Figure 1: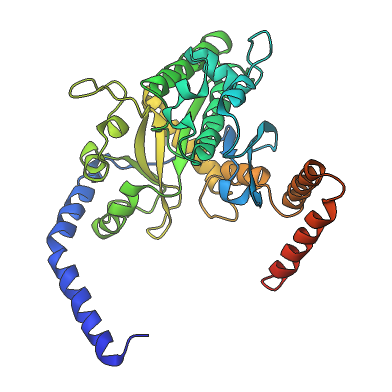
Figure 2: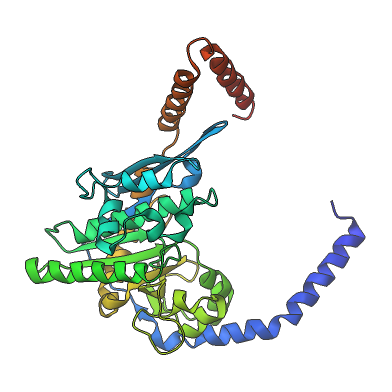
Length: 374
């Protein structure tokens, strides 16, 4: 612990650093205040809303050394399972890619449909991070499965009513090779337009993130500027200057149609907004990406989201459809115990009946040690 004299010194040093950064804070407040003219009040609407949620990787890791498994599970807000895979860092990535197709070459999974749609044959062609050089490819595969499920949901499904599809996360990604990500966005947009021409049904896609670097950087400035202090649920487009101040990659921040300078945008097909679904200054603000080609419908989209967010639980004023999908997608408690049991049983089979008691002894010792923390 700090001594009394150290606390006083620490207080002085912190104060000096804050004073030195005051000019930068004033600049951020000025940037936030510039958004005021673009703030719009949200008027609530009702519509069918569907959210996609890939299960949290932190909840789905199962280890019985040296074996490690990652359960990849994607569900929608109605609890319907859309993707289920089990992989580990030692999995054969080429075989995993082949597993996405039937023997005749037709896609077997949503990921297979995405690969076919983008004209790639292997997972490494889809993402350079799927080379197996690092164990982190397992997390990349999980994200690819979520994007593929989203692609399949929009490009290969029919919609009887107007539907808002919500992704947990922004409509931006740096895991795809070349321009494959924006090509996927173009195909999604073409499918949305096709649904409207054929069935006169509107399908919207948004991505909502609980935390983003740009919002964290400007959160204090937004509060000090009072830009959203209007007593209503509201939203405002995030200016390009704010994005450029925080993110280093222009391909991640520039609009998909912005071909003005440098390399073409390839990591983004959304336009970012700051959105507050509650009426009060203390209500949370979220970062939301609307598809660039659907920007003209932003007012309606946020009206649908606001109606869903008001019912949000346990996170207040956060879209309930995402929270429902999150609850369904988690692999925990009894489900996790079942997965662990299957892993141990598989190991017992591999080592043979004469060594099976050794495995049982290790499992029992592990359980006893863990109980002291429960």
